[in-house]
Length: 410
Image (cartoon, rainbow, N blue to C red; front, side, top):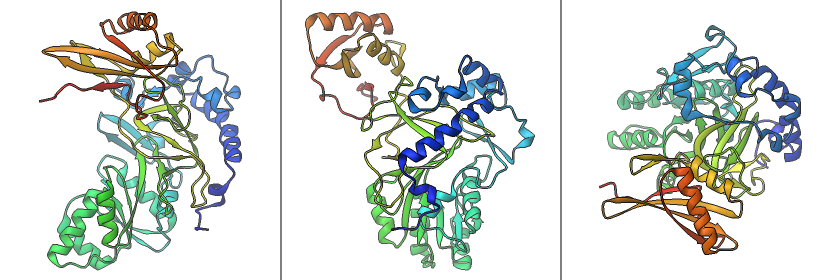
């Protein structure tokens, strides 16, 4: 059995659920002391939110809305009752979105992901995530130091200087994007520099295709991916089993139908929604705009938490048709008005120089009458005319896409 960070990682799934939802009511009570949550969750009894079914009744917060919300009520849109001066670090990420770091040890829950990738006390870690204004650098830095590692706060770029640091300090581990890891290895080989000390890596922030994974492994570095955001820290991470990503402890992850807060069945692709059990700055059902799918069973590495496939694209598929925005929420509204429909996909294309819409919808029973009814609903909801194509269940791909824009961008 592989070594685990702590015994929580091997708790029975039902035991973990009891623990998480046993803590959630107090987290909600604390959160509702902040003015935005007091309004957002008005009328909610925190003591009644003790299951996934109950949690799914709460409204979501869209990360894509945070820039405008924070601009209206700086700095944290009223979702935090504490003053900025009570935090350890304050950041800004593209958007802009403003984030805070708590004063507790390992505030971004990064140590667990680093441990799963083989980082151990006494290792020297080359951290190439940015330390400038964004939280990425300090996120991994705090996790590595919580493990007892020494950290080289390198940040991105300055390849020649980093090669020198690698030769001098002999780091065993790397944190950064997979792209920059390749740049360092390539530059070291070209310049005849010794980078052989690097054996382990946690990579994030960019695609890590199979071809690059194999290239990095062939060069002697075992690299594992972490799924993280600047708001929440490490959400999920790979282990030596490489059978999906393990959801981190102390968070509740849901996968919902894009444009809604409605959980999808396990095995169906949907949007990631996260609730963090952080008493200082909780996020309650924060919809991240990323797509993923829950994998069945537990990992062979011995960790029993939920597994997800990792990042599978963006859920925000908003587009324009004839100059009007068409949103996933509108597709979801059509589905709500016709419960006999299963999976839906709005296909946007062009005929000549004119935008066209076709709603493809799975249904057990198809009829001309149902097609006409759905077409009328489509026009009512979208304020645009479109055709409806009813297809048998299982026809549409399970990829989380509810709007497919097939117009040529050339």
